[in-house]
Image (tube, rainbow, N blue to C red; front, side, top):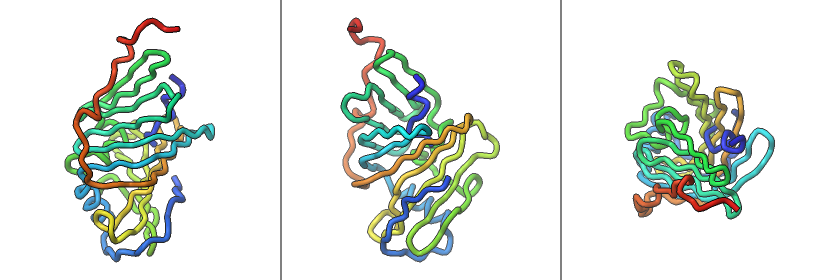
Length: 204
């Protein structure tokens, strides 16, 4: 399970890409508007853990509360949030762990009513990028997430989510970078179901 602790939950992001700038006087309000405008999102992701290991895959998100990290072929891992709980599944060891999605930094992305005003601060805001760091002071054990956006007029609320970095309670850092983002496309609820690892046949 050591691999699973390096997941996609996860400062200093360097994903700002030159894009069309969108003037916004209140950056946290703009991020909130972006999150509220995104009902679904699909993207390719590249995940780098604290040891430098890189894994790739496909991310699917559907608000509220649902997401799926489908890793590349040959990686026996799966991360799924089913609307209530975030499941971390290792098909090699047949182990699964879960906790409320609201207890994960990724809950910011899937919340039905995102509000960053109490827990977030702006790290960078210039003509090309907006970087926001979020940490709930009442729940420090849930870690810190730093979201990186490029300013893109055609994206929801003028922001394109480029990725994030999470630092967990054990100070482990994981960075996720996104590409080929698509917003508000049809996503079936069945996407967020998974095979229970304990029900698989005998190993070997």
